[in-house]
Every structure is written in structure tokens, then in C-alpha cells.
Length: 157
Image 1 (tube, helix red, strand yellow):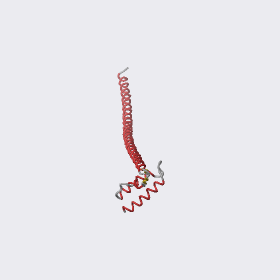
Image 2 (tube, one colour; image 1 turned 180 degrees about the vertical axis):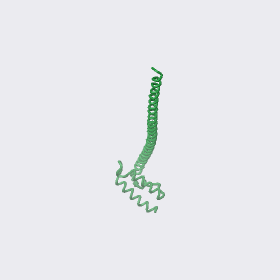
Image 3 (cartoon, rainbow, N blue to C red; image 1 turned 90 degrees about the vertical axis):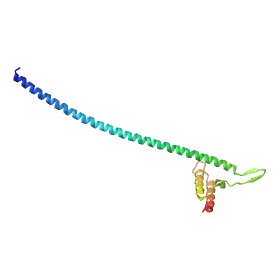
Image 4 (cartoon, rainbow, N blue to C red; image 1 turned 180 degrees about the horizontal axis):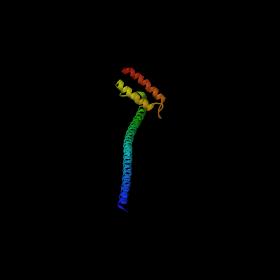
């Protein structure tokens, strides 16, 4: 190989290597761009997942609080109903030495009411307990409660 041929071969080889470098650099840039886009997508997905998991956790906490409140109120209502049933049993017809005393259970239901506000609150509570749509509801008792409420309402108005 002569000097001229060697120079030509070196020149061609340098050109080929330059083309290879340019192709590699272009592939590196494309890969970096793809990598950054995928990273951004992944970061975006992680952010959305994080926000979604926090939202789900907050909804779960809210639901647990609502359930706890409902359970507490249900227990209070059951206790009130039980206390009322005991009071109603005590104030029914009492037979003592052949003497009969009749107590109107509805009057007992409104015992201790001393204002219009207290009357309305007791009335609403009694409706919750004895409404006919409830399991132990009773239409006759509701009618008696309404009558007593209307009479007492006139008293406080």
C-alpha cells in the first residue's frame, strides 16, 4: 500500500467513524428524550396515584367517622327506647291493695318539658322512636303523642 492509498483509506475511515459518531449521538439524544418523557410520565402517574390514595384514605376516614357516629346514635336511641319502655311499664295501671291508679303514658313522655324548645325536641325524639315505619312503631301511640303535643304547644305559645 502506497502513501497515497493509505491517506485515502484513512480519510474514508475517518469519514465512516464520523458518521458512526453522528449516528450514535443522534441515538443518544433520542434515548435521552425518550427517557425524560418516560420519567415525566412515570412521575406524573406517581403524583396522580399519590393524590388518589390520599383521597381514598380521606374518604375511608370520613366513612369510619360516619359509621361511628351512626353507631353511637343508634345505641343512644336504643337506650332511650329501653328507658322509655321501663318508664312506660312503671306508669301503666298499678294495682295496689285493690286500688287502681291510671297514668297516661303520653303525659309521662312529656314530663320535665318546661319550654317550647324542649317540647319540640322531645316531640321529635318521640317521633323517631314510635314512628309507624320503625320496627316497633305504633300508630296509636303516635296519635296520642300528637294530641298531647298539640295541647302542650297551646300552653307554651
